[in-house]
Structure formats: C-alpha cells, structure tokens
Length: 462
Image 1 (tube, rainbow, N blue to C red):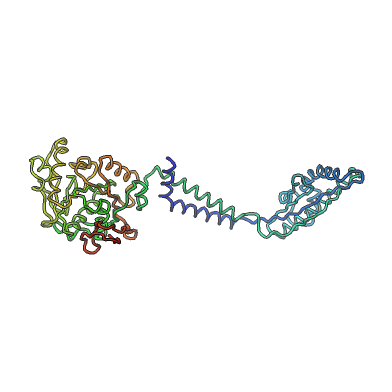
Image 2 (cartoon, rainbow, N blue to C red):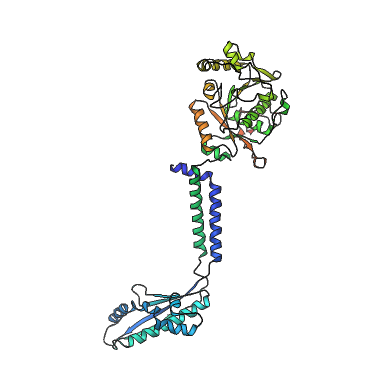
C-alpha cells in the first residue's frame, strides 16, 4: 500500500483506532494505580583533600582521582551493616544493597547517594544513614594511607522527603499507553485491510470512489401489490432526496435513460424495491416513467404476473418496445418486461441501443435496474444508451472492493456515475444527506409536493 492509501485507511478506521488508543490509556491508568509506589531520596557528600606540602591544584587533582572509587563503597558490608542494625526488621545487607546506590558526577568531587523505599520517610532515613556511614568509612580508609594528605568527606546536602513517587510515573505511563494504543489500532486497521471492509458512512463511500451518497434508504420489507403502487414501500423522503441529488449531479436535468446497478451480490431484493418505489414516486410527480426489467431471472416488478412478451420478443420481431410495455398506472407508470425469447448476443448489442432510444422519446425517464451480469441487459449492453448511473450499496454489507469495482467498471464503459444510494440503513442509524443550496436557475424538487422547482437569485434549498 502507498502512503495515501494508508492515510485513507486510517481515516476510515479512525473511530476504531481511537477506541483502541483509549483502551491503551485505560490500561496505563490501571497499571499506574496497581503498581507499588517507589520514593527516592538524594544526598550529597563533598570530598575535600588538604595537604600542607602541595598546592590547591594538586589537592584537587588528588581528590578527583580518589573520589572515583568512593561510590563502590556504598554497597559494602562495612557501610550497610550498621544501617541494617539500626533499621532491624527484615532488612539484610543484600536487600539493602538493592535499595541504595551512589555515583560520582564527572569531573566533580561530589558523591551523590540515592536511597529508595515505599514511603518518603523511610527513603529519607535510609539515605541519610547510608550517607553518614559512607562518609565515616571513607575517613577510616583514608586515615591509613598517606597521612600527609587529609581527606575530609562532608555531607553538604542531606536527604529530604520527596514530594511524589518516582515510580510509577503517570505521565510516562499514559504517554506509553496512548502511543501503544495508537500503534495497535493502526496495526489492526492494516491487518483488517486485507479482509472485507464494509461500507457504513458517506465518508467510506467518498474515500473509496470519490462519489457522494445521494440518498440514504432505511430498511424496508414487503413488495407492492399488483398495479397498486400506493402499497409500494413508502420512503418518500428518501425518494425526494434521491431525485434532488440526481438533478443536482446532472446539471438540473433528469437523465432520459438512467441505470441503477447493485454493488452488493444478493442485494437484488432491496434494490428492486427501491427502484419500484422511486419509479412510483417519479410517476406521482407527473412524469411518464418506464421501469425496464434487465434480468429475466428477477421477479416481475410491482408483483405483476409473469408475461411471455417483453423486450426480447419485440427485438426479435422488429417491433417497437412501446408495443410490449405494461401499464401500471395509466399515462404515468409503465414496466417493460425482459421477455423470454432468444436473441443472438450480437443482434442484441446492435438493436437494443436504438430501441431504447426510441422508447425514451415516449417517456420522461427510463429506469433500468441492471447488473454487470444481467441477462439479457447487462451494463455493457446498456452502456451505449445510458446517460448516467446510480450505484446501489448495502449498509454494512457492501465491501470497499465491491463498491470500487462497480464505479471503475461504469467509468470503463464511459457511463458517468451520478452517486451512491445507501440501502437498508437501520432506522436508528439513518442520517439525511445534506442538500446544498440551489444556484439561480438550478432545478430541484419541492420538499412537500415533489414537483420540480427552480433556484432563484440568493439561493434556496432543494
């Protein structure tokens, strides 16, 4: 994957990544709360050398050479055993040695002692006792050496009670939890990229295809009764929304021949109900509408009885398609059955374009519900006459790859996708797609009547 693909992937999975990061922060808080607290106290011993037979510079160089060895004394039994005797309890020289340390900062004559404990008071007491014993042990050892040089260790900074524990560090733990959570979230997103990635939102659609969602349609059940379009699954708001956005996407005009292709296998039932309902809605706005059945395997539209005469029979006999359309509503809504006759594929490709062109002259809009594998009318067969296409995707079922493939195939056939219709949205998840203001002269539909309206100067809402 390229960088821009990773960016798109992380944008699509942002909520999941943030949720995992939140879990990482929660885990860090839990670890911080459960971890035992450790307090550190610090003291400083200044080492001074004095010799009547040398200069101050020589004394300082002598001290610098000697002071490097003093930190190792802090874990010696001579230093720790007196502290164990004072503290008593479960302390031992070995256990105490793990709680104290010392260092000599470079190019200094200081020895810094650090003591650790689970309470600030004990950390202070432990550090001061060890520091006192260390200074005394240095005096004892140096007293047996060159007596012309006097070594005088002095405690210049005694230990004081720390105000906060050094471990655990809440800021560091939270930062690590956040970074770890974000890293795990991004890895999970990348790992899931090879599996099915489902379409849920308009952002998912835009990221995959660059197209807009032109309508959100809630889940519907049932089919309209024969020739009784009043019983079509009624989602007038979605149909009005769809019409408005198609007009906006097509410069204010409804395409004469409009394809609708499902990008999700097995979604023919829902997409067929959508097309029937939208056809009925368009007919109620006063338009003459013809719904073309592109696949002979589909159930007849509007619950009508199967017919033996349809598009294939008309093409085979050289008759106009208007001779086989079936009225659903007088003078407004018709259905063109697919038919059952056999027509040679070459003849079908040659005849169907002009025939549908003639049919569209008799109607305001010809709607065709097809797929890339529909028989007899696949998208390839219809590409020569289609003036635009809608891609039908199922909420939570259509994958990124399916949607992307549908858009790419339409563009390869030089059929312009006008947008994506998101089907079967749960009622508690349905969100209306915002409609932009109409420019002057731009056509939409009236929000109450469904009739065409035209934008005026100053803009209006479609």
